[in-house]
Length: 238
Image (cartoon, rainbow, N blue to C red; front, side, top):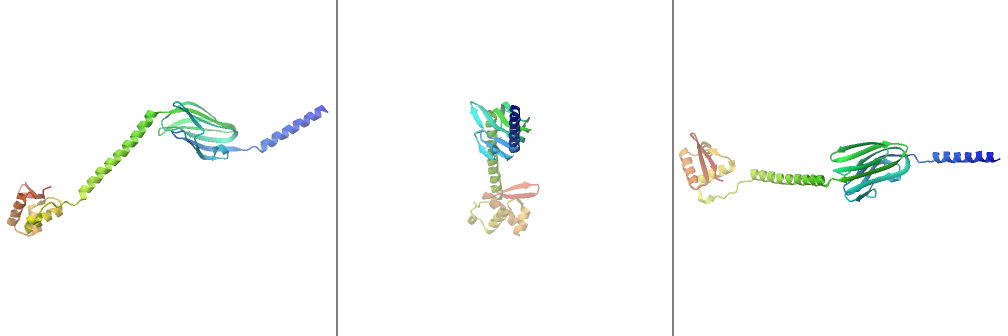
């Protein structure tokens, strides 16, 4: 009788075990933990476990002196998982203990820890510190780059503005004769040196008259003349 009752008890226990296995949740995870320099962790990716819902939180990080600790734990069995942990820029790892197969690499100043596995719980424990010197240098580089952009943009703006701005008329036109005023306006309009011959053609007056008016404008310090061989170059005085 005792043996029969014992067999029935074993049968009940075995049945309960089968039921618990049948109704157990089959968890999976493909997630990223992105940690910033203030300890805030952004969880993203795909999972059917409540602790791996997409969120931003600081409950998984703590700091003692200059050492940070990231600790994440799921006691439930995860049938299949892959994870990526991105530490803050310029971090230096002191200790790592994580579930699954581990791989560590660097990308753009950040340490990236990846792992994968299955049919185990998920435990992630990482101690790290942030190299403040490198971080400050990085910030200075960003600030310097912004300053260079601003200063460079200012000089480009000034160059374009000066290149295309119209010359300011500071000459008293009432102190000029009609021909002198016309010669001045031609030089001002062209905005470049002209030969004496070109002015003669443009104005349609004799060479002697051109020479006389050029000498008058030279005397009034409105134009400058430069001789190149037998050619006279005329341009406005700045």
